[in-house]
Image (cartoon, rainbow, N blue to C red):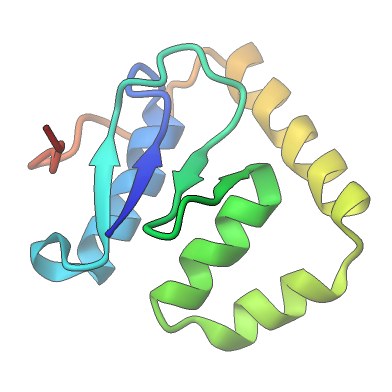
Length: 111
């Protein structure tokens, strides 16, 4: 099972975690870990030992959750451009004090 670490203090990040949880009933594919407080990137640690950050993590999550067209379209964009967009989004969410969204109904943390 893959572990997704995100900034649990950020409403935007919690919203993204809720989106993942809604599409992964029972946590069959992902363990969500809100322990990345202040992190500038979502991180996916895959079951096979890879560590994916920023847009690579997003592409992976979309693929695993069956959003193959969205993942394929995003993957067509060169990584440096995807990550440039991701970093701009991360700066904006911090500037806005991460006020979008609220706490997830149920956190699915791991050991």
